[in-house]
Structure formats: structure tokens, C-alpha cells
Image (cartoon, rainbow, N blue to C red):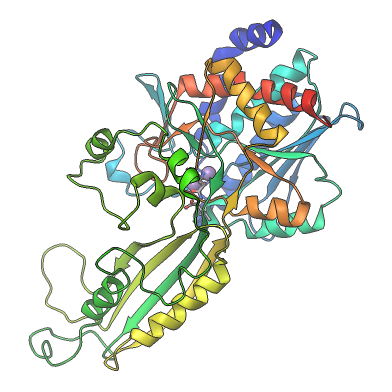
Length: 457
Ligand code: BES
Ligand code: MN
Ligand code: MN
């Protein structure tokens, strides 16, 4: 559409500058030190919603960080798209591995470097800009509700409550989210599923205090060694997870669907090269795409205990701990899996130690249909702006609230993501390509157009 093109090209530089301003706000949800910054970021997002043409926009307080909600209702008879995204970001550490400040965005080789550039400020902001494009050119084809939360990276628990309490306000026909990735600009793709998550913390305690490792070592079990043995035992020689019952409910994919999944372009040598590894790893009998898309996994996210400072200190630690998460697939339930994990972990602990297991946040897996009018509208939007049909893929990440959109609001979601797997989300030097940002702003209005045209058909 010419009017969209013209408006976007006239305002291109401002669209980028505004995103950079947003990226300067350190809205780290996990760290209470940034509480005021998170609030400040919510207010900035609200201002941009108003500027984009929303009839109303508000910062909704919660028991945690605020939710920003805006809407533009042009005709109650027309369909309504509920846009979801998050303005909170992951902590930036380790800081020394960043080549520029995580909250001092810079553009290098056409890429924006900053924490949140891709996940999810850059992506959610495309929706605010796309709304501006449509509203300011008087071409908005449907109603838009837009909800940007500040606690996605810490489990979205207050958003779950917000959904329960605001069912009428959030009434819509589809949820649209840009918080996932595509294969590449040459091979645009749409994720048709997300994995669930069960996140645990374990603590193994041995002697009642740290001990001299010469005086006591060899005679008293070392909790760090025991913890490593326990963790190591949770994968067998085929890299299958050994927790009894773990796979009981796992949905098995048909051979035809597996075949289709593996037709997505994927270069194993490139993958290894990009990561600097000699070999990949994973569950026997599955390809890399299957291991990250349709199979559940168990990962150690962090492990500590004893002396980790400079130089050498001889010590037998009294305690050792780890944060362990499991990615789940359809039909697995995060509470059930957390319980299976906790029981198993207690059971395999030798008498030389005591263990404590705590469950953190979790979430359920989702599969989004690829034959729905909404998916087809997204595919047609991609086809229009990329000149290619998107490839359906399965994403490895999790967005726990998506399962609740269905459960609480009865709404399906379309995952129209423009990130790339190597955008370093959650890692140092997170980036987002400027072209992806602009391409997203260009593509989103077409989703609105095609979804509205297909509505009720
Ligand atoms: N945007 C990601 C999820 C994602 C990334 C989905 C890439 C698909 C592809 C999201 O912000 C995220 O990081 N989610 C967390 C879970 C959350 C409960 C902390 C995750 O996946 O680890
Ligand atoms: Mn995200
Ligand atoms: Mn994230």
C-alpha cells in the first residue's frame, strides 16, 4: 500500500531514534534495583501508544511491574486484534563481554546493539509504529488492542491475573505477537509452536560448614561432587532424560510431520561454525531441528558452590546449588513435571547429603494451527513484503502467557516474529537488524488488512 510506504519512508529516521531512546531505559525486570527504570519504561511505552493514535492508553499497576494497555476501536462490528509484547528485558551481565554498553544502543553494520534490541523492545515497538502508520494514514482496517507487559522475562505471573480480571476489556478475535525468530531474511518463517518450561532450583548440603579440603577431604562427601553426579545421571548414554515418567505424556509427531519439519533450510556446518563447536549434541534419534523444536530437554542454567574467587582456596564446600530448567512439549504439564523432577532428585540423593528442591516459574507449550485464517493472513503478509511464502517452524523458546491467552481468553495466537536465532537474545551483544525492524513495521499492517478481509469467511 503506497500510503503506508510513504509514511514509513518519511518517518524512518524518527522510528529508529525512538526505538534507541526506549533501549536506553534499563528495564530489567528480574533485578529490583531497576524498579523505577521499569516504571519509567512503561510510561514511555504508554506515551508512544498515544502518539501512535490510540484513543486511550494506560499504565496498569500490578503487584509487580506495570502492564501498558492501549486501544483504538474504530468500529465494534469489525474484528479486533490483540497485540502482545513485553518491554522488560533480561539482565545484561556478564557486562565485560559487551563491546558497547548494553543500555547505550549503537548501530554497527546495520545492526542495533543493545539489551532488548530484539527481545522484545525492537519487536514490540514495530507494532506501535505499524499502528501509527495505519492510524495516521487513516487506513486502519480493524480494531486494535495492545498490551505490553513488564514481567515476561520473570514468568508473567501478574499478567495471568490481569487476564482473569479483564476478560471483557481484552475481548478480541486473535492475538498477534512478535517475540520469536525467523530462519533468515532469505527464508522467512513463522513459528507454529512454543515449548513450555519448568524451572527448578536445587541445593545440596553436606557438612554443617565449609571445611579444610585437606583435613576433611576424602572422608566427607563433597556436595559439589555429589551435585554434579546427580545432575550427570539425569541424562543416559543416549541423552535421554532419566526422570521416571518424564516422557509419558510427550506428544509424538507423525513421520510425515517430522519430515516436513526437517525440510526447513538448515546448515549444520554453519550452525557449528557460528557457535564455535566441533560437534552438536542431543537426544539420539532426532535431528537438531527436532531437538530444539519438538523434544523436551533438561538444562543446567547455573551451578555454584565453594570458592569461585581469584586464585586458589582449599575448601570442601558445605553446600552446592544449581538452577535447572526443562523445556516441555505439548501435553506435558509444567506442575506435573516439576513434581516428577523434585521426587526424583530427592530419591537419587545419597545419605551423605540433604537436598532442597524449589520450583520457580513455569509455563505450558503451545501449538498454533497453520490452517487457520489468522495463520494464512500472516503467511500472506510475509508473502507480500518478502516475496516468498513463509516456512512453518517450531520454536524452542517459551512465552508462557500464550497458553493462557487460549485458556483464559479463548484466543489463538499468531507468532509473527522477525528476530534471528543469532541475535544473541539473553546473551552479551544482543542485536536486531535495522532491516528486520523496518520489515516488521512494513509487514504488520498487511496482517491487519488480510486478517480483516478473511474474517468470518
Ligand atoms: N522471546 C523469548 C522467547 C522466544 C525466543 C521464543 C526465541 C521463540 C524464539 C522470551 O522473551 C523468553 O525469553 N522466554 C523465556 C521464558 C520466560 C518464562 C523467562 C525463555 O524462553 O527462556
Ligand atoms: Mn521475549
Ligand atoms: Mn526473553
